[in-house]
Image (tube, rainbow, N blue to C red):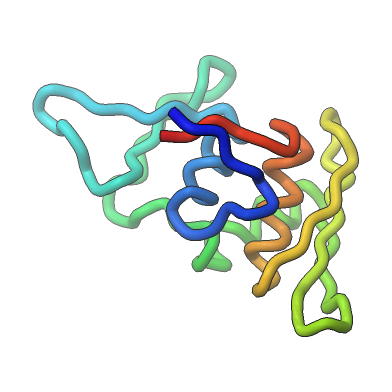
Length: 123
C-alpha cells in the first residue's frame, strides 16, 4: 500500500478511491478470483451487489458518476484555466473542493476528499 494525494488521482486509482469512499470493498471468490480490476461488494450498511458486466469506471462514465454527482449535489464548473473545479457539500462529510482536467475527475476527487481526506492509501 502507498499513500496517494487525492488531488492527483486519475483513472483506475480514482475509481478505486471512489468505491472505497462509498464504503465498498473489493471482492473475490474462489470461482471468481478476479473479474477485471474492480469487482465490488457493498459494505455492511447496504445490500450485496457485484458489478458483473460493466467495469466500475466512474472517472470516464457519466452513467456511473452522474447519479453520485446528483445525489451528493456536487457542483462542477470551468475554472477559467482550461481545467474544471468541483465543490462537494456532501452531507455527512467535510466540505471539499477539487480540480481536474475533466468534469468527472474534478467531481470525483472532491467526493473522495470529502469522505476520506486529502490522502488515501491504495495498492
